[in-house]
Amino acid sequence: MRGPSRVCLILAGFILAGETALAEEITVDPARWPFAAIGKLNVVTGPGSRQFCTATLIGPRLVLTAAHCLWDRARRRWVEPDSIHFVAGYDQGRYLAHALASSVRKPPDYTYAYGTSRPNMPNDWALIELASPIPIKPLALEHLVAAGGERRTRIDIQRAGYRRTTSQFMSAQRSCAARLTEGPAPLLVHDCRAIPGESGSALLQVEDGQPTVIGVLVAGPRAGGPPGPSFAVPTSAFLGPAQEILGRQAAAPRRG
Figure 1 (tube, rainbow, N blue to C red):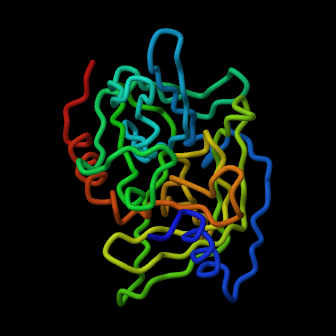
Figure 2 (cartoon, one colour):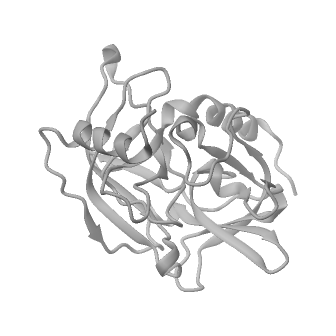
């Protein structure tokens, strides 16, 4: 069986063959859209125990993140929805809006493995319904299969999130390259960075000034291992469930 480093090296060649990697750090304002729709996902894992990832608002009461962000490693179980707190546009203690979760949907066959093992990556996504709406314009999801079924190569991808080493600031990159792998459960292989805490952040494609979500970051090269690409789950994996939830939420009578 191929080890993780072997897979990374093969896929690195796959994405970058014939392309120039131009991923670069940028400074963004978390109070300005579309970055205002990105936030910290704080998760309570026990008395005095916390962890966080990044999540993206894709509906007034729906956010997207990685499934492994919701696993309590110490107690070896999934956290309850009321332990999940989305904070939009977070910046050094300030934020634009926040809400607790009311429910979570993730693939039933997703199995947590520390570091997110390759077989689990295509199912490493979660949709979190919020108990109250966030008054910020959500980001739309885009399917990555072009007309005629041709796989599209994407370049100039943007990504923003909260890394563990600088958790009070939003960090971001642009000019990343991304490409879909082949097979029934494709992945987006890309050269945006993936540092702990940034898991769950959305890959954004901007066309004609309009940003859309094309995937969710789930993994990168192993710490201390050889360099390699990062991995994201494309929107095709969760577009159907997201549309179903958004439709149900839109049809539900408003409270209050």
